[in-house]
Length: 420
Image 1 (tube, rainbow, N blue to C red):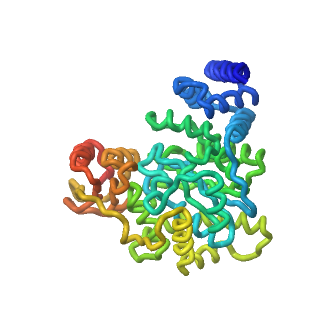
Image 2 (tube, helix red, strand yellow):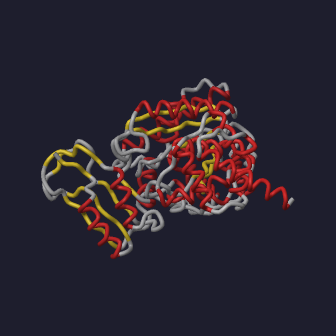
Image 3 (spheres, one colour):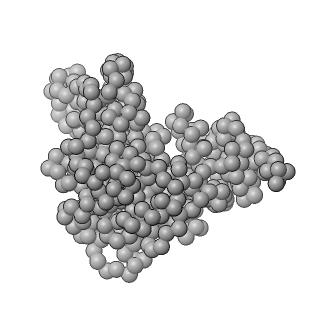
């Protein structure tokens, strides 16, 4: 066994070296890489080399299939009975927390939706960071299976599950660099979905000037490649390419993104209609796929809107939260509040002609997001709105005075809004 482990390690190193110089890797090499990563046979320097290789040269379809398959086979899997749905966004846009709306809608409609999520990589909060405001998110496989079979869904961190564990190691190395290659994103998403027994999936691909994908042609290429590889695993994918100039919600950071999602579920008058529209659209696409498999002739869009407006989705999220060990009596008005806040004012009158999502992320992280749950900001103004000089543009929140002072200084050099 010791000799075999040594051989696998050597094979992995050789495969990474070959990829760095532009050669194609085989399935055996892909398996050696993922086995070595998931069993900590190689140091982070080799993980970084692999990440660099994927960013520099990318992978062809066979390599993507091999790497995804190997990533799944070197980890745990969920065993779920029934129609299993899933939703994923390629990310990059802060303040767009649709998952907390979509998961309870699909579960309330009678389908299984085990949402395993990462913590923040390139934004001020990941879905797991947000759900952790309401309930624990760290579970083992058997616990997740019980939660999902009991409630229909879950929203958890995938790091404890051991689903595609090599991916978590790669993410840890990539995080300080704040980048992921598109091919690595495909492998990462697909491996987690296949390991979670997902059969149907809606893929959110936002496009915009300060997004991961900036051009529609790149988004189409990503979608085509993703769906091709997914089909080789029997996973049906419906992709939604959408243009996004700014966050769909008002809140940035865990507490404020959860507040936005709860306001939609509560059908609060002050809710973000952009966030609601996006959530309903994606939930409808996913439910249509489930209906087709289940031979149900019901109108998916009507059911989604009924579940949302009746309060059944909110009730389902509370049920999921309780099953995960959280409270079920939360509301958008009952979430924790920050000790310190600061209103950033408009330097002049005019119309908002641009919103810089990179700067939103940078300032929110300076404030302490996502580790500090109440750190972040609330965006008061939206794209194309008129503003008067000294009118509030956004409000910073944090529990640390030092972080607030630094964020105020950072905001001077990173203006979130362009005003013309």
